[in-house]
Length: 408
Image 1: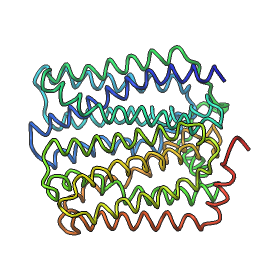
Image 2: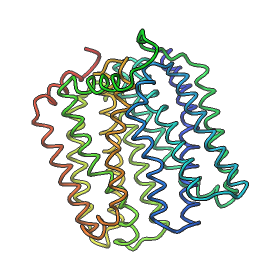
Image 3: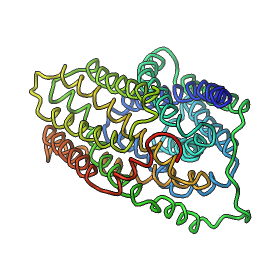
Image 4: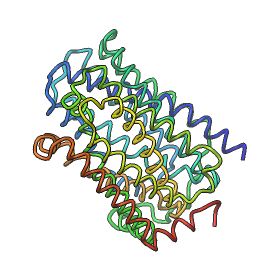
């Protein structure tokens, strides 16, 4: 038991530096684009450049993650992201920064992440006991939340005192620390296939088959994608809600972001306590989905004087979101064959992120055509219905009983 704790302590130390530096650089680029262009379309396209490669490549990267050495895959992927950040830094240094080239390098960084994330997620159940997976997911969520809280603040500070070429080097440093930490741990690999040349389409189909083999997992995943579909586009409306509806400023906009990050941090901390090892994870997810729906519904009912309550509800939604999506990650880790987890996670990550693209493209229509408040109310009611419906689906209920406690 001590061995797995020591292994994760080393991995987490590197992961913290890597995720924090990536968050700093990501927000610094967004700030720079905001200052340089002042165009919301440019920011939306930058986000699409980050998300689209991850979504498209994610359908196939799992095939290679399940075949390759997972530690080596994470090191190479992190190193590739660092090289892309270094290239961006050089372009900033030479003052050669056409927007289209920034889009390309952002997309390449995303391509590296499309290999790194499923490799990391698929490695967790090979390192930790099944009874500790919820705790591991909670700590991983806390690390991500710390980066989400500190990244924007540090990015804003650094871009004001340093040239962008130097800011980009923070990502290189973070990747170097993360890769070095991985050199000191042993990550086991599942049994490899005998043939050395992968049949990509066949193995993608196998990954899909593993994902849909258990009806409870299938129905629960559909409900998760449904919640994601309604919640993610609404998250893109937070700035408009703060600035236009509540008449806020840049400080209040930052306050909302920090509230969300703190909520995610609290949710991760809650997941890491020992009590969560034995809870019914599926029942927890459905109750949290209901709470998340009520939270967004309440946001849509706020008066223009209700900004403080909006910040509080944003924090609550961060807590709920952290518990909801992390719990599903643990369910996949416990119910799917480790040899197929790379494919399953890459496919799931791609499918679950698909709603972000139309959401980003439709942000303006949703805000003006539907109305900000109505958008929050609709998302809240839809999420509430999904959470309630999932409580009464027998396959999902049985899945919750079978994932309660330690390994079956």
